[in-house]
Image 1: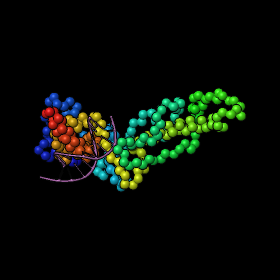
Image 2: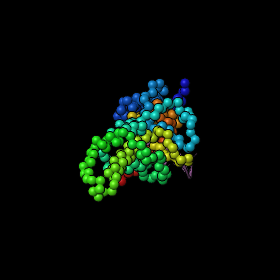
Image 3: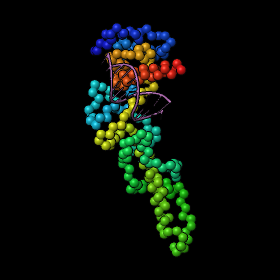
Image 4: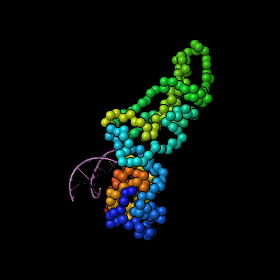
Length: 247
DNA sequence: ATGCATGAGCC
DNA sequence: GCTCATGCATA
């Protein structure tokens, strides 16, 4: 196997048992310093990939991590459009609220009108409140002829708009149909446990070497570059806080 | 407002 | 690969 720690700071983690770190994190830190643990935890990363340079297709080079796309559905899938919506629970119909602020790449993907009204839509509006109250005569002479026939169509259209506005919320892992050359920067969200481990490492060694960063990255199942950047940003943050604290 | 990413300039 | 400044996506 690879022989980590050939440097002079191999046992910096051994002596940490002061009140700075909790025991679990300290042990985790020590574990990096000793050897690579074979038991990797779950899949903590919430992101998929970081390269959006219009030429991918090959998996991450040098990263043997198998990361299935996991995401949190809270009740609706992107494929579920059969939703028994009650009559207008949402008032502001904004079916195109995609990436909002700062979006200078204004491209609105597939947004097709309600071509077919499913039975659910019709049913929901029928059971909602159907009022064919006034009937009058065919020649009573009020309202345009056939406008009451348009009302269900409009309502169905609204409900279709709602449904599509909802299933428009597809996961960020979905195959995006971006125009060629359009890159959206992605933020890797580091989960809380991993973040706490990183903070534990940082507390004992704010400037780890490349090998150490690689070891930490492997143990936490994060990309090495993510860990490296995290340490850089953490140093920046610490400087800022120090600067803000003296005024 | 916070936190991850990127790029310039440097060593 | 680091700092520093800034951009930009989230919460």
